Length: 619
Image (cartoon, rainbow, N blue to C red; front, side, top):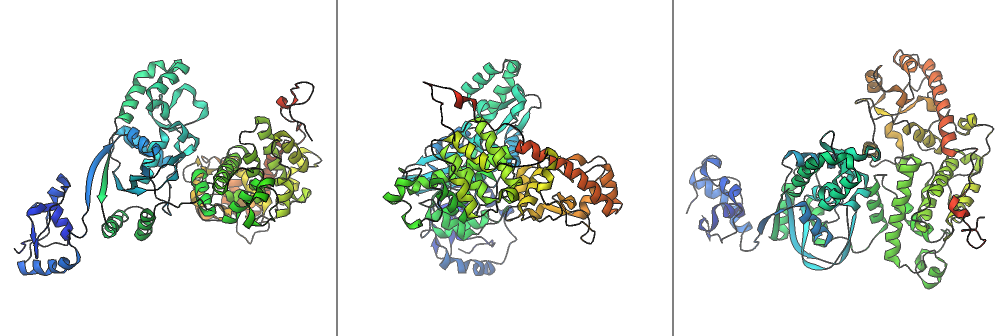
């Protein structure tokens, strides 16, 4: 039978549209499962392409007879609707698997917030595509959730929908809120999804508490002022729990069929290499942890920037022992274990714990020290010493955290005075001061090694070279961190720049040059100084054109006087005025961060005596 219609579709598509009754040159196609009304709609004559001559139709179809035979590459699928609770169960039982694509979880906090806002508004947000096949035993990392998954023959590998699944299951799980990107709540005042702010009290209920009835009741008990919003909370909970996420599960598919699917999915959004995606899924996830894998996971969890593999190796080594010159080949031999801070751990555990310690150290840098990104870090050894500290003391006392913050800033601003160059000698010297079982004594030794001598609190700026600014220099990075502490606004929105936005700007950079602009031309005397630098996501011309009296100038270390000089091209006047602003601010900022002149005493708890001896002997 000759077909009266011709259009560029494969035999597979014809079969799924027209079923077992459709004939093609060479015989009748075997029956396939129906794909529902969507496919049936496409088979109506009015939805097809223009009518061609029957012979023309035969010419179109004849090459496909040899290439695509449904009986040689069957593909079947079923449709399912999952609730968020269903997806969470699939994750926690290890049935749902996320292949390690080179592009892993990339959504930021705003993307995740937008997803949940769409859910509550009833907007469509797409479907999932899963592939049912076997999976081996492995440790899973899905967002902030870690799962030990057993080997199983019916695992569901995510082909499309990784960002949505990861967001859905993490946001409603209390464990997921450890990652700030997933820390969302519902504002009872604004009646919308918002990011969690610790100071919002009873006006915002965390989404994990909304999602779980028992947790919601407990939250209301702790926040009686919100009792009149119980009905609203119940309505939001109903919408979250009642959400149905459509999914298609491919139950039989060969490589050719999956490549076709990947190609079609990959034509949307940020393009990936289809072969790489397939190979990642077909081979399953990596069986063992690697240094590059740790770097990738740490970057995903913190958005601090991608650590160099060498840094990860150093972190693994210094965590176990401060001597980095040792032979790597025997790291896990009995003799090396005996002198390690963790003599019982094997290689796999060492890799896992190194990743955890790195994440803790970076969280400290971001949240306590105020370093937003790896490119802003004055010295690499600081991260590595902190990694050893948090590996040995996962939950340090608050006072010791405060003192470690002082140590960080004193080694940053006083590097020249202390003879610090960022060498492995500096790392070795500081790391050996951190001793297992001696938390406060270790902190006191580090503080002693970072002792500064300054005439007065107004002299801190003299410790930095303000006349020569280069983005790869440690003192210039100290200045950038001080500028970031002002919460500088994006000139386009007059809203503070966020760490996520900064990470996007610096995604593959090794220095912060991409977000550091010069405000006056290089030919101006003093143009190479710190006073001529600004953190900005736009270039000099656009910044000057957009800046006005309504701009939050103080956040940029500017004022009306300096802005006027800049826009009137009085460049030398601008540099003199801004230099004075910068110097005053740096003195105040660094005096506060280093806590210069303050007592560096250990935690009060360490002075609690029991039987006449202090709780922890101090150096």
